[in-house]
Image (cartoon, rainbow, N blue to C red; front, side, top):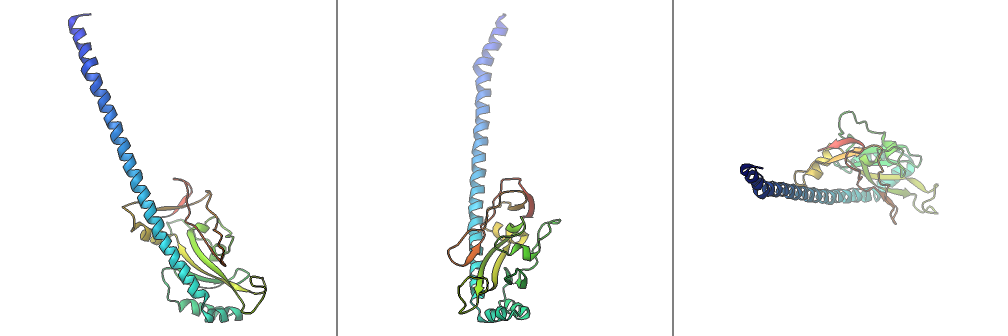
Length: 230
């Protein structure tokens, strides 16, 4: 091997190779740091969205409680008067939540408030009567996060029996584009997507008091069909 070749090889081994290794390691370190930063920002955005949703869920709980305590609604439900039920619901002057009352047989006696959710084009909303039962009849039930309570006839016993049940009142939150826009306002420029499809959605959580509620749905990335996005 000539002197020039030996010098070239020496230069490559001593100078070029270490510089290339250091550069590659540096780029990997920068990439890992950037990935950790992105993950931290996404986690912060997720937590902010969960807190914002919790506030909205509390709002739905409060609206449901006020409605359930309305004597006019109890009278209308006891009489089976759907028109009076509808009038009571409209009298609540709630526009950012869905208010609904169902009969013991599942019929929707009245609805008011946010009755027209805005999902992505091509996403059809299931009939309200299929979304309101304690055990929803469709997989798309996460699109309506709800707080519900059964109302019973006064003085009827045993409380909770079929013959005492007047119906169910519900205050719900549509997880549509408008709702995701509200949640995104509390995050750091994060995109929020609600996907509905063949994924293991959480079941409604049980409560000790006569109310039921739904937890925010979670799914793996890319699973299901997007129903709303912001």
